[in-house]
Length: 235
Image (cartoon, rainbow, N blue to C red; front, side, top):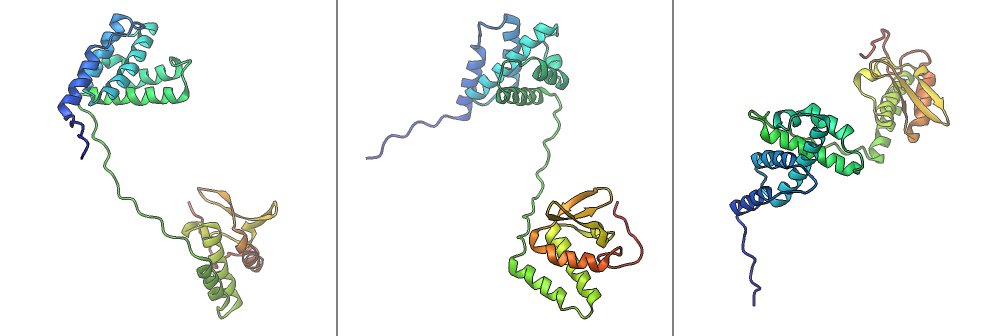
């Protein structure tokens, strides 16, 4: 025999219950003015559930107490301004946990958005591309073998440097062009590539690429790792 199913609560019933929570909210710790402000702004926001109504009432009540303490008018246009919310979060939430502070800020910002006469449209979702799978060990070995099979030593070293800098250090296009053999340095038992340009930084090289990149850097010396004669600096 099937057990009886609980009756489904309609959206209108849920909203009505949330409105009842708001109307009956009379906290003893708040002044009547502060409690009235909280009930008014939360009622205008029309929360869809009792739990959401209680959360917004709590946040609005805390903000109203802060407003009374610093002498601000208990008005939605004043207290729910972004600068006032930030001031409240930074100076008026002593004694609460970091998690509660974050929740208060989130709820007050949501309340402010709900009361805006002409709210800004929500940002559109943008398509997300899946990151490509990394090269397997066999593929890397194949690329290094292909580089080692080039017809001249110069080509072999440059092709090897390209594989090592790309797969071993994650460098791309404009970051590769200006690199010389002197930009590959030994530090603390590891190998680094000193990248210049706008995002100047020292990039560590994966250990399996140390030996071939050392050989390519020694071959290039003060010249370019990937060849060329005119310096092209990435900006």
